[in-house]
Length: 199
Ligand SMILES: [Zn+2]
Image 1 (cartoon, rainbow, N blue to C red):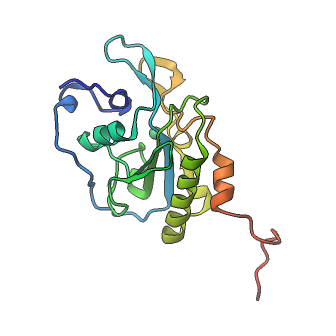
Image 2 (cartoon, rainbow, N blue to C red; image 1 turned 60 degrees about the vertical axis):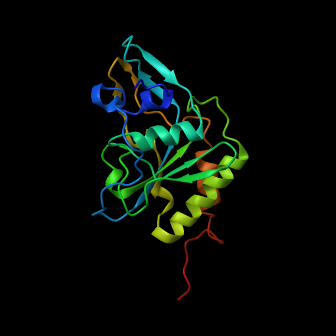
């Protein structure tokens, strides 16, 4: 089986030898041993190294259905949620199980993928952002996640592309993602803003 999906090439371990062998769809992960303190926002598109040319290429967003199929067929990587451009939300790995989605932080974080090129030019439609805000509010309430606990993949992985050491390998969700506006919508400023509490 060839890795036909562009998204497959973006997954770090995909398309390397046996990783391309067909496997059954999988939407489970290892049990968590650390508590959840963060949510990481990704986009399905981004830079990677072309396995044939050895040169950097930009992988486009793909479709929700294809991207879900690819990630659930991946032997190791996973996500908890994916949100399409029209706001359609899909669940994959349950929150109380680990999805491997970001180097070093997967054990304590929840992964949300947004269908977007991640190139800083592909606009995130309002319906997609609204669905993300609704999901983040729900997770924050249930899990006690703070504003600083919501992070972008690019905030956590500063590694460089193996085929071009002048480029970062993870820049998603990219400059077009309205990060501060999303945080403001999920975590409204307290009235008064002085941080005073009633005694
Ligand atoms: Zn990512």
